[in-house]
Image (cartoon, rainbow over all chains, first blue to last red; front, side, top):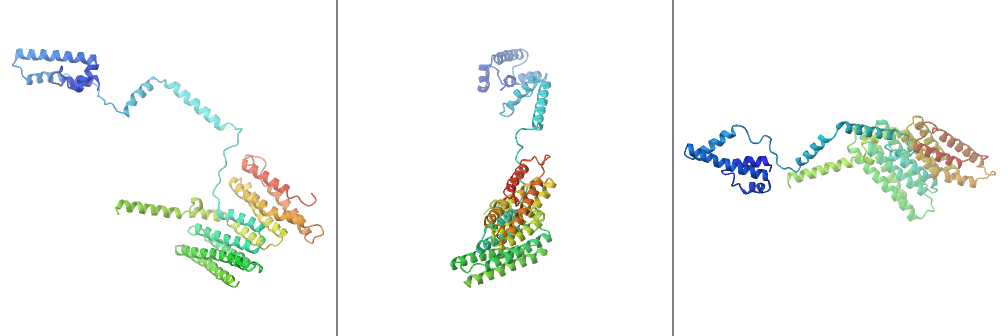
Length: 271
Length: 174
C-alpha cells in the first residue's frame, strides 16, 4: 500500500486518528503518514467545532463539508498500482532503460554484428561442417551389397538366399511407391521382380547340388518359399487399394511369386 | 466410454495409420517414387549384372562380372561429378568403392594368384587387368581436382580411396 492510497483511505474514515488495523500497520512504520493522520485528526476536530458553533452538529454537515473539499480535486493524482509479481520488474527495467545511453548500445550491437559476420565469412582453417546426405533409396544401397555377396558366393544355396532377399526388396519397394509411381517405373519394377524370381530364385533353386544334405536342401528351399509366399500375400493386399492402372502389374507380380512358390514346394517335396 | 476417450483413440489410430503409411526413413510415396524414377535405369542394369554375376562360376568370371557392375556405377558417379552433384557423387562413389573392395578385389586377387602364363585363361586375365586399370583411372579422373567442388572433404576422400584401389589393380607389365 502506498502513502497516497493510505492517506486517501484515512480521510474516508469517521476519525482519522482511529485507523483500522490494516492502516495502523503502515502508520506505525511511516512518520510522514503519521503526521498526516495527526493533521487530519486536528482538522476533523476543528471542523466539528466550527460546525457546532454555526449549526447543530450532524454527520450530514460533516459529510457535506468533506464533499466540498473533495470537489476541489482528487487527493490521488496518479493511478494507484498493486504489487504484482510480473509487473514488478517493469520499474527497474524502465529505470535502466532511462539510464542507458542508446547511442553506445546501438554502437556495441553494430560492432558485434560486424564481428560475427566477419567470423562466419573468414576462410576457416578447420574443415567445414559435415555434408548432409540427401535422400537415399534403400533398394539401390541393398543391390550394391547383394552384388558384393554374390561375388563371394560360390554355391547355389548361397545365391538362392541372395535372390530370395532381392525379390523381397523389390516387393517392398513396390509397396513404397505403388500409389505414386509413374507407369513406366512400376512396369520396370515388375520386370525386375519377374527376373529376380525366374532367373534368380528358381534358376538357383534348380541348381542346388545333389550332394547337399537333404535336410539342408529342404531348409533352403522352404526359406525361399516362405519369402515368396509373403511377397505374394503382400502384393495381393496392395492390389486391393492400388490405382486401377497398376492392378494388373501387381497381379502379374503376385502370380509370378505364386508360381515360384509352387515350384519351390515341389522341389522341396521331391527331395 | 466418453467422447473424449473415443476422440483420443481415434486420433491415435489416425496417427498410427499415417506413420505406417510412410516409406523408409519417413518418406512419402511421392518421394519414394521420385527416387525410383531417378535410379530406375541403374537398378535395372545392376540387377542384370547381378544375374550374370550369379551365373559366374570361376573367380575370373566373378571378377569380370563385378567389373561390369562397377563400370556402371563409375559412369553414374562421373556424370554426377560433371554436374557437381555432391550428394549423388557420395552415394554412388561409396557404392563403387564398396563393390570394388568387397566384390571385385577378392576374386580378382584369387584369379591373379591361380592363373599363370601357361593357363588358357591367362589372356582373359590380362584383358581384365587392362580394362580394370583403365576403368579405375577413368573413375579417378572423373572426379575434379580443382575448384570448390574438388575441395569438398568427401570428394577428396573418395578420390583418394579410388586412387588407392587403382594402385591394387595395376595393368599387365607393372
